[in-house]
Image (cartoon, rainbow, N blue to C red; front, side, top):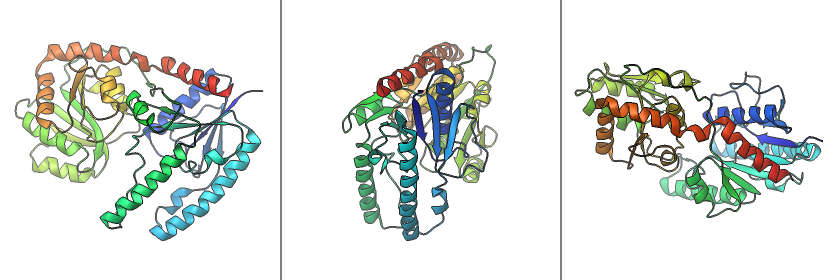
Length: 382
């Protein structure tokens, strides 16, 4: 009898980088192993899926629909959320007990309060894609600041309690693994795989820098515009292109007010960024909060040297400072400006780092990463 792996997700009809990576992994497992793969969704799937799944993957829709709660006031939202949790727990429990999978993979979402209580015999594995002290935080801006902190603290303690009830965990960065090891046992690190690893194209005279983030004040792109304001007069033939979600109009107005419209352009984040990397020379990442360097990895696969703030976790696991890019201490915008200006000025350095960037992400190839997952699943399902 074939062994079964169940992935518990929310929805696959909205573009989401994490969901794209998961679908990539699930498809590989379905096509290259003897495991039977199941994907369980809580939201309606009448909308088309953003990411194609293999015909060998069975999709189960629990039709709980937590997204219906988004527009309700807080008290009603809490009440109806608890009712939906009861429905989900009953449906999920009955289905898992009947299926008897060997492994159930949780993304630490709506299932986390009760998954450990379901006695279906499966090994409960948590995939952790957030920092211990940030991914669990929730915003309750309609409360006073003091109550906000209290509610957030209670929520965080509950989440940590439920997470610790799972059997084992996988993190996507080694730094995150070390952090989670302090409070949970049986943690391993398996990085996210690359979607593509093309041959390096012939060098072209492209003087364009790309950045990917969120059009929200304080999340980095506004700082990058101020950095570019210092560099633009020195390098008038260079261009900066921003990609992201959020308050696009606000950032366009900011660029206009700084008289940078000629050299800085804002765009919405496309569904697939891979089509863009080959059009640029450098990538800069200026997040001031934790963010695994997914875009750094992808850009480096296309030979783009990268500059990033050394925030936990991810950038320092990809960028070797002064070899394939630059790492800058968080908040040191003067240093960031200097390093970016150096790469814009020095073509020989760019070409050297280009080769190193491309070589350094080979350990993240799909055919290298996925056997580590198979080894883990084989171990857990024995």
